[in-house]
Each structure stands twice: as C-alpha cells, then as structure tokens.
Length: 200
Image (cartoon, rainbow, N blue to C red; front, top):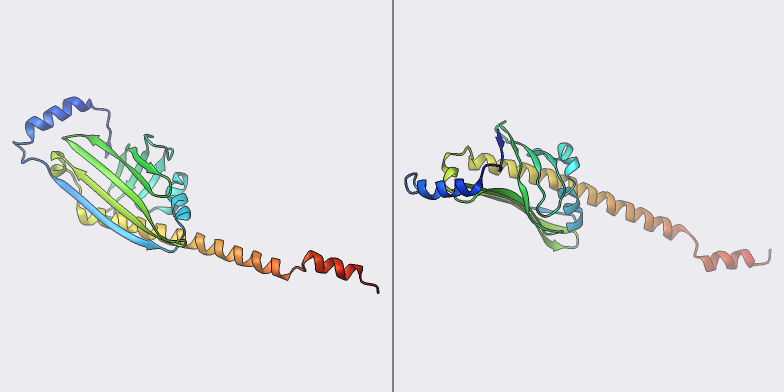
C-alpha cells in the first residue's frame, strides 16, 4: 500500500465537507503508549533521529529515508505486527531537539494522521518516552487502522528503543569508569617528579 499526498488537497477537502454528513461525520483512531528508559535524553534522541540505522534497530518503522529537519519529507516503510507492510511519505511536522519528533500529514477533512515521539526527562539518566498515533477525519472510518495492532507496533518500537538506549548508556558508563580507574592508577605529576629528583 502506498499513500501519497500529491492529490490536490483543496478539492479533496471540499469533497469531504460535502460528503461528511452523508457518511456519518468524522472518526478518530488514537494510540497511546509510553515506556521509561534508563538512559539520558541525548542518547534516546540520537537513536530516534539516526534514520539510516532504522532497518537494524526498528521492528515497526523498518526503513526511514530522509533528514531530521522540520518540514522534510520522509520515505517510510512500516511493518505492522499483523504482517501488513505500508509505504508512506509523511512530513516532519514538529521537531524540538531532545524533546519531540512528529511526522504525519494528510488532507484536512478527508484523512489526517500524526505519529508522535516525545521525550520527557525524569532525571540525568532516566526519561519517559511517549509514543502516540492519531488519525482523524471521515476517511478514518474506512481505513485499515486496527487500534490493537497499531498499539502493539508502537510498543514493539518502544521496547527496541529501550534496549538499544540502555545498552549504549551502560557502555558509556562503563567506559567512563574504566577511564577514571586508569587515571587513579597513574601517579600525580608532582609525586612522579619528586621521586625522580630524590638522590639515590
């Protein structure tokens, strides 16, 4: 399935306004998920915006081509938990470094969707990752958007992100500890000089 936003939006919006009363008005699908991650916000953000490595890290959006820049168009392939694969071309709608990455788009009145990724710091080494999806307008009632399947897709992405971020954070902490221990084992410069200058 390929969804494109190239159809004239104004024409579709007018048609939606005219047909909505006959088709039962608007509909909504909402997905709400979250997970706590023992890693700094910077680590989580770096993984979220490293689109090139999505194929090796991500079980839901399995491929993402584009730049993490506000307004950029993305080439996105999704693999849903039910096996269905989708190809969409959303835009980055909101981008706040270390805080939010949201992509989506559509035709107002016909179909509009957003995929929201937010980071809430809970401490220097702890964040809450908010992962939501919102679909609205009258065509939603006819779209293949099973909430349970979408929720499981988001939760799979959450778990993969948590595993990756916590692994990277642990590796960083270990490297810092090794560096501190190595530094502690070295003699202070003043002591080394005094020893070298002592008569034999």
